[in-house]
Image (cartoon, rainbow, N blue to C red):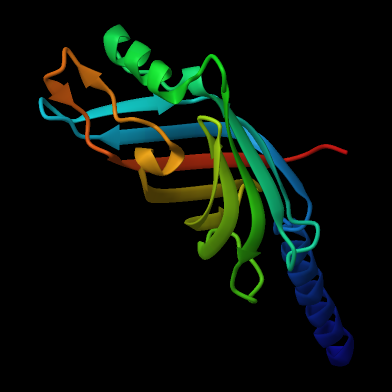
Amino acid sequence: MHLIRILLVALSGLGALTSSSAAAPAFEGRWASAEFRATVAGTSTLHDWSVESTSAVGEIDTTNPAAIRGSLRLAAKSLVNESDGLNSRMYAALKSEAYPQIKFEALAVDRPADPMVPGVAQTWSVRGSLILSGATRELTLVTRTTLRPDGTLLLEMETPLKMTDFGIKPPTFMGMVRTGDPVTIKIRWLLNRSTP
């Protein structure tokens, strides 16, 4: 009788462990945009400025964690500031009528060999091509990537860029106010698992 009780307790513990493992969200699969926020911040001879977008379309494919792929697309005119004047000068500098979309295509992702643990962030190095204002440049982004306990995937990053690297002339206003060439881009991108 004592032996049977020990076996029952052991089997009960094994069942709880199996249930806990099954409940953990999986990392492998396909992911699609759920929430997005990008901020571009810069300087000028008058004051600092920033624009923000909360609208983007993108996906990440982690079916093979050793060969992750992904892309992100947003409308140039989704970047906005409270000042209509700043917006119009920015859209002109971006040549948004001729090149309405900003695109990033991931070419390779360098990430730790350790499996993703829910709630624990990993640092990824993402090499890709950025298409902005008709110019394509290759760059590497460092992201803080988290598989969240609720089953969503979160990428956060911050990177500096220069407008002139993409052939963009920093806007001026009335010939007196000049914007600086360097800008800082911050992105918070939340993705849900795609349905087949």
